[in-house]
Structure formats: structure tokens, C-alpha cells
Length: 158
Image (cartoon, rainbow, N blue to C red; front, side, top):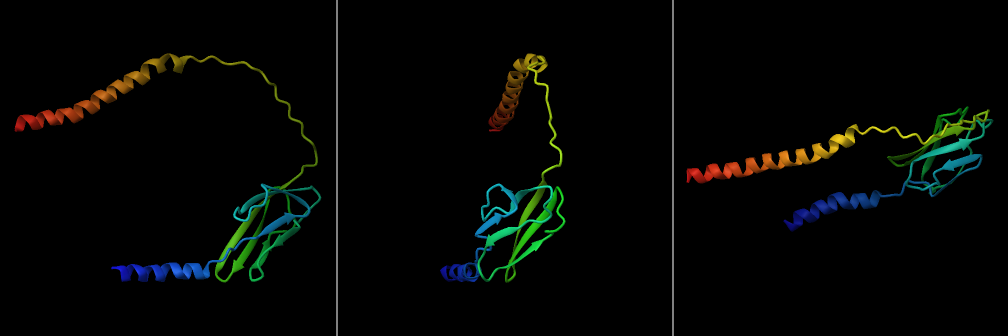
């Protein structure tokens, strides 16, 4: 049995460790915009904020030498566009997704009327005091009947 377990351990775990390679960017900076959240190699989804007159993202990144990189859809960017960085190593592929937000031409000022009006609705409060305890009691009675009623029937048979 030990030999079989060792065989499966070698068969499945050793190739995993041999082929294991961190397929991530070690660093990433945006030269013509802001990235949010701050770049973390294991996070693959980001937002980039660009000025309204910028139409592509300039990336500055560091990667391992044997990793191939491709930047997809990095042209004619508009608000809510998407850009991807695709990393490839042998058969493995990892993608970083970037949602593009562009600053709008006009500053829109939204003013909200703040009031502290609280609408009193005592409907739930009035019935909550009765519903919760009643429901608990009913459940306790049902569970009690189911459990102890069967025991009484068993005792009568003996």
C-alpha cells in the first residue's frame, strides 16, 4: 500500500513542481495614467484612469526573460474600454484585465438635498414582538413531539 501511495505521489506531485513557474509580472506601472488598486502580482483585475485626450495606455513592466507578453486592445481607447496583458509560458496563459475610465469633459456637480426625515413605520416592530417568540415555541413543540412521540410508541411495543 505504501508503494502505491508513493507511486501516485511521484506521478502527480513531481511534475507539478517541475513545471511550476510564477507566471506573473513582477512590477507594473502606468506612465500616462493612474492604476487602481495598487499593482499586486497576483491580482489580475484593475482600473486605469486616463485623461480625456489619451487614446492608449503606456505600460512599464518587469517580467522573467522567458515569458512572452502581448498587449491586447490598446488603441483608440474610450471610456469603459478594456485592455488586456496576456502572459504566456509554454502552455500556460495568464491575463491581466484593465478597465479604462476617462475623465469627462465637463465637471458635473451633483447636489443632494440632505434631510434627516425618518419615516416611522412601526408595522414590523409591532408584530416582531409576537412573531419571533411564537415561531420559536411552535418549532420547539413540533420537534419535541416528533422526537418523544416516537419513543413513546416504541415503549408501548415492548
